[in-house]
Image (tube, rainbow over all chains, first blue to last red; front, top):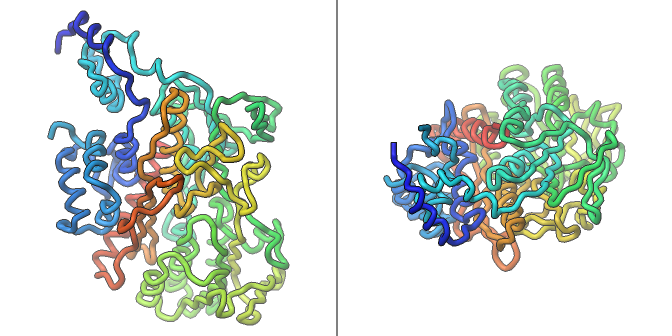
Length: 99
Length: 432
């Protein structure tokens, strides 16, 4: 259990800049849900779910599918639709962060 | 002390982190939550299919403070995806039937009512029950309606005898029953619709499912497709799959080779086409299509019969504060599919939330994925990624495309497994 430092938090909040109500990265990442499970989760999934998939691997594997170094049934065709920037943004919102 | 994080969604945590807020502390100061600045308001969604149900869910996800109402007359929704599998005799209706319990649990006000009219100037909806509702933003996802006045001999009653089965439900079961009652060696004739229509590969997946049933139960029967166009989605792959799995059972006649329909004699089950007169045992007449009735009645359609929209936000270019998504809208090269509708729902929901927060619109790429079964163990797919450029939805060059021709059986089998996986996942995303 972490201790909460109220005064420090108050200072940070007071200077925080407005955030986009919906970020592009989230919207990009939410596209994955239709096949890979809402929030990356699905019971009895036959398509790999992404909740516990390391974000760094989402980046490396999307690029590998796109660049032809990994073959797939359909992900190669999807991955070709995205730039490096988009793949990296997407990975901030799906998969296990910090891995 | 309870862990305050447990109540937060992943996106709320990310937003806090993005704002430079030390997350644990920020949550202790609940008065400073991120939701206040997004602005509350009333958003109404009409239509509980893929587009409407997904829009309601993502509106609430992107701004939990919004009052989101979903108006859908039926208590259950039966999807068109998967309905061909029911016709093929190896899938149950209950597997493609969904309800709105999860939507209610997600904080959406679900009303099982019929909309009588929408007043776009006053921003008020009138329900058949007499109630009225005001909206700040309205999302209309009415699907398709049929044009019964294109071909001679048919009208709205035709579907009782010659099921189109292109809105799933009783129609699906009627077509399945007619198929199962067909005499040995009989003819199943399909009239496939002209473009643009819902689910471009849908009629051709259906043909495979009918053939699958016939191969086991009525192997001398024939399937004839009289097509009201000259080419169709995934054509090479379908034809390859049909020949491989069903030999010569299926004959496809394109528009210019005799497919053009002149009239149908419903009572005598006879089709008159350029090809000649065909007496069939089962006729699956899939009529030409246009946007759903409510879109037409609200004046959201143009001369094409579909709804022009801003292709970034999906706001109607005819009526302000009304957004149209799914089969009814004109979304550039995006096909009219459940997957497209769900993708559009996310883009539309995000941009409604942004507009209500006084922020600029954004575009993230829209996506379509469409799997079709040729047999229960043999599937093919098409995928596409769409960008927003110069005010229009365009396909990303070099992306997407169809499954390879001549692929090994294990690849087709894998795609069949993914077909069911796709269905389960998107159904959970939309109705879960």
